[in-house]
Image (cartoon, rainbow, N blue to C red; front, side, top):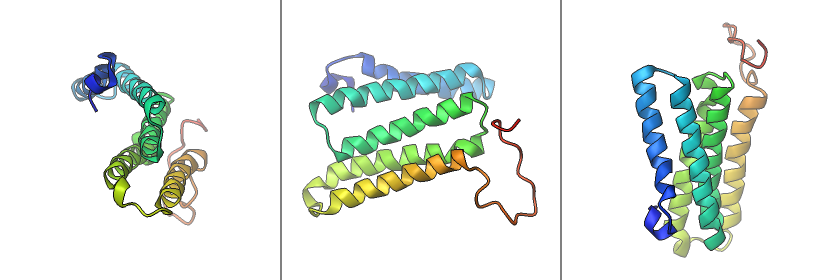
Amino acid sequence: MTARPLGTRWALLAPACSGAGGVALVLTGPSLAGRLLLMLASVLLLLVYRRLWRRQPGPALLAQATGASSWYAATLLWLAGFTVPEIVPWLATFVVATIAGERLELAHLGLPRNGTPWFLAALATLTAGATATALWPTVGTTGSTSTPAPSPRTR
């Protein structure tokens, strides 16, 4: 996706902020500036998808926007004090949903008639799983011999 087909240059700020945020994190560690730049990049990406949605809504774009929303959620959780391992499900949802949406766009002509509802159900399940990890972080850890570190929500 480029700014030219979208008809605006501000869309180029999303990858620029993402790159700058990545560089800031490499140079300074998990700094506030790097985290804020990544959050801004995710917000700008959501605005790009909103603009595209007005042109041509569809399940592929919904998946990509879900991915961007997951990235935004990950940055908010990181800014709120969650650790990187705690936000990995959100980041994985960003990558998986974005790629799935792009693949759906490419395969749309060959997709069976009932393929779209199944795709949307899988997307909802993926997002629900990421949400569950934030709401119930200790589920699945019972019986473990090690004590999980307290999350920022219980400190």
